[in-house]
Image 1 (tube, rainbow, N blue to C red):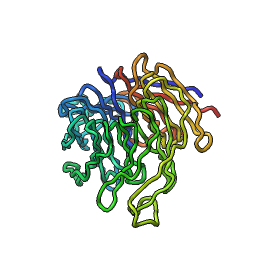
Image 2 (spheres, rainbow, N blue to C red):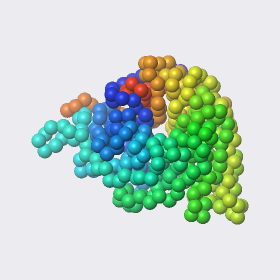
Image 3 (cartoon, rainbow, N blue to C red):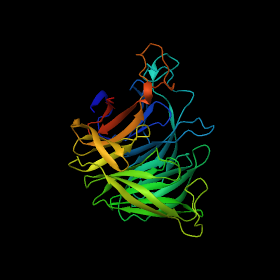
Image 4 (cartoon, one colour):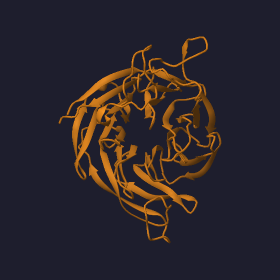
Length: 387
């Protein structure tokens, strides 16, 4: 099953650390070493906004707040090596309507970029902030840092005032990544201490509900399976030990929220038992920096220091095969991030008819892989399905 590069965007002069497609809009955010985040249209692959001037060092991670209920605001969180988390809100009166343009048209008729407002700076971490992620309903924001801690924040309705609900310090080394479960208020964190920890609220306190041990070196990235049923949970992890592993929750006890996994043992502390379900076929010959689990096809993609792009598919429960592999996916450069995204309909060139944020997808709910590396490029890939 071949993989094909369909587009490449020379996005930045320095390395791209992280990429985040918006969950419901054709927008892609980048985190880079040049202290800025950029927003790209996934209809045109043109830049539509540049977010800069507020962070003093590299932006390491970006995360979109889910649009839930009547909330129409487009909100982005940025995590920086300067020790802060930034909150940005798009000006809904000035955003790209014309899909062919590279920005908004101002009063003089010239094309500029969208306007975004920097509304909050979250301070408290004592060192570089490595990761940031919004919870499934946008209620909480998690951040992690080189200071070995994970912070959980709660925003007000304006997304301008944030309260720190918990500082979690069970990891013994640098925390590299955080990820929320797609349906539960369950947080996972990955660390330089070779472990993954699970966190959830218990009687108004956030506690470590589980620890996953198995990797033999730094765990760089984690992602939850988005296609599991109610009460089920699986996640994928990648490591400097050159392995990609899948873990599944076997059991859970203790008091939990009504929206979460049911339990009859209400007097016990929250506890989750996670076990290794599979080690995926080993192809990488260096640290694996990123994994992403598709919510459409159920496939997993991994990238790392060796420049390989690997796509895996589950053929039976816990049995995975490699279905696509690309060497030197960013030439001689390391690849730091890979994410799955909905394949949005490509729109007309500048001056022709189209709509920037219409839900126009290709047939069969197709998807793409988006990668970013030390070359500063964003590469777009498709996996060809052979029927």
